[in-house]
Amino acid sequence: MVCISRRLIISLLVAGIVAGGAALAARPVAAGVSFTVGPALLDLSATPGATGTHELTVSNTGDVPLAANVAVESIPEVPEDHTAASWLSVSPSEIVLDLDAQQRIAVEIEVPEDSASGGRYARITITTSADAADPGDNAAAIAGQVGVGVLLTVEGDGELIRAAEVTKFAPVLEADGRIGFRALVRNTGNVHLLPRGTIEVREPGNAAFGTLELKETTPHLPGATVLLASHGSLPLPPDTPYDARLAVTYAHGDEQQHTEAAASFRVDAALALAAATLCENLDRGPTMRVGLQNEGTVGLESLVSFTVQSTSGQPVGGATVADPAIAWPQETTELVTDLPQRLESGAYVLAVTATYGTGQTVDIEIPFDIGGTEGAPIPLCASGAASSS
Image (cartoon, rainbow, N blue to C red; front, top):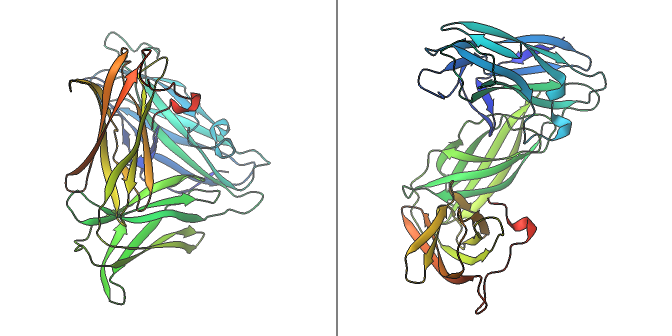
């Protein structure tokens, strides 16, 4: 029998596991269309050969009837040996809900007899669609989706391994000039973890200057590396040496395991742009690259924009990296993106600007040519260079 070991108030969406509520609400896809699903997560434990059924409840909270498809999906980030998608089935697979109506969804789980110990993961998706059954003249036929995560811990052959390592840890200059912290934590075990952590900052040989906690996070799946941030920041004067120590804890059965990392630093922001290049794609705009070269001991979160100009300075097109990029101390971080549109043959200038800290900026400009028979036109991109990040 499959039993619920605990219920976390978490939802599993396309981008991964994110915080949610006891009942997961769909983002509105049109005026009057909304629904909730509860519970937001099934966190289960089982042994090989176990079977069981659990229920989800879908509630139509909008002011129009609702038609939706229900399905089991793999999580893209989860490797094949950790997916539970083939172990799950749902009934019914299509639902039609009048106003204020509810529908129970049965989630059946069947764990194979030869299953090894470890975590298995999937999600149940509820999707409104024009292809769903017709609920009437006022039907909702606009696509929208929510997902309910299934975290299944199997205790079978072999050991359940709960382990993690900190692959990077650094202070980071925040937008208000204070110092926060970032850490990359990798789950090196075979089951999901829920890490917690504290950061202690001190001047060498002195008492602690301050202590911060890591922001609460959602379960980290096996093999995943997750960026964690401190909750809050500290006002640290420049030119003073500091030592910081991170302690990460996570459950290992009834015990608490831990891993640590340390960093020595001064508040010495020093960012430069390096190795800005372009290459031409045959089916879209050119691929643009730049290196964020951090020569200091404090990490820098940067917003980076690429602008293509004519030789007379007129903007032709551009792209901005959607999320801030972290330039880790004493490292060069490469950013890659594509210009949204193709360019006519001719001469251009690529201008790259990075904004960090309290509004400091660095920029670089490089001239380049597209096509033509003279000069040095940019090369064609290699097959693996076309993907953006």
